[in-house]
Length: 314
Image 1 (spheres, rainbow, N blue to C red):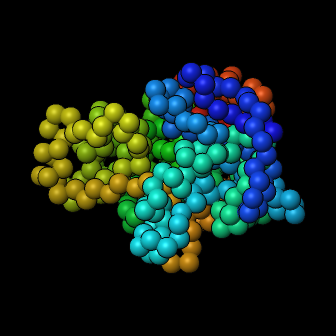
Image 2 (tube, one colour):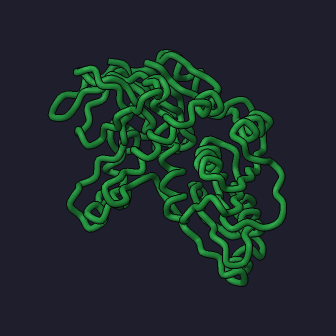
């Protein structure tokens, strides 16, 4: 079967054996390109696995599903309390990082990784559930309420996937976006673009020192700073931002991927939310490509002025 892999910092379609062994076989119909995929492509330590952790498709018995790309041990303390994103196995449990991911014709995954699609969510759009779950978990940890003022720094996919639940909750939501395409998406979501005053909850979704400083500045004293971005070059408070965190007694909450709260997985909450926000697909997905055009798709995704979410459709 076909699979997308890195070779000398280039995207290549290669032929690999079909996965075999225990699990559920899913024919991939939707695989999103994430900013972290672009990072791995340009990283000197190239991944030796198939890329892609945003995915969905159809099982052999005809079920339309998204796939949660974490395969934790299920027995460590973190897994037992529902924080399986913090599993002792670490990155070893992550598809598209240490395990073969979803930019391929098929994947073979444990039954627990399947996310049933709610009515109204097309399998072609199922890859959006993963980034939406990132926003859902972070906002759950931060205690989002519909009465708060929320600012989000960063208008990429993760910033917009945080904005959608905020707007849906009724919270007054502002998104600081850089590019015109992103700004159009912010308006379409029902959020505003220009910050005004200070905010109860500020989400940092850009991953730069400048964005972090702006997020700190926008927080009201005693407010909450939610970190959804990844800092590939290190987490540093520029200027006086670190001092301001202390003076304001900000509550800082880092959040990574998704887990479970009680009996409810964040990915299932995200799937239900996508079903209730039918316009979100057209707002986020700017480009679709067949799997054989993966190199062109990655080049498009790297141009943030033109693309938000680029989807591969095997």
